[in-house]
Image 1 (cartoon, helix red, strand yellow):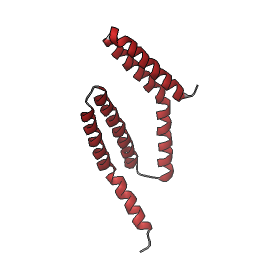
Image 2 (tube, rainbow, N blue to C red; image 1 turned 135 degrees about the vertical axis):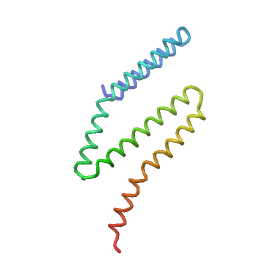
Image 3 (cartoon, rainbow, N blue to C red; image 1 turned 30 degrees about the horizontal axis):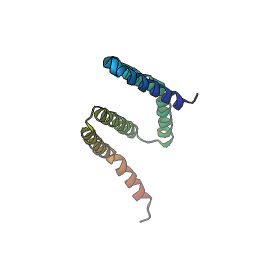
Image 4 (spheres, rainbow, N blue to C red; image 1 turned 45 degrees about the horizontal axis):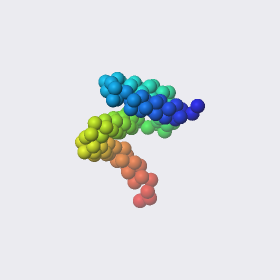
Length: 130
């Protein structure tokens, strides 16, 4: 079975179990939801390590600075954490707070990306004829 189908299956079973348990035992429904999310995260670990391998290969072949490598991963991590936090806010009925978290995350990502943008612009201006 394709990995995405397994992820969808776990998510749907978790959702159904949560719907069934919520009226009876809301505390168990929350635990089932958390366990379902953890199972999905463990299913994704293999793919995340593959992503790191590809990035390592890209940075080693291009001889880019390791600080740039770290910065790219920090930006990716901030993006995922912000999205996850905003989703939690929305799920708990605080959609407007989730929107503010997303806005803050976008601003932080832009600020973090400024050195990359500056490096790209410097490379482009060096390549242009004078």
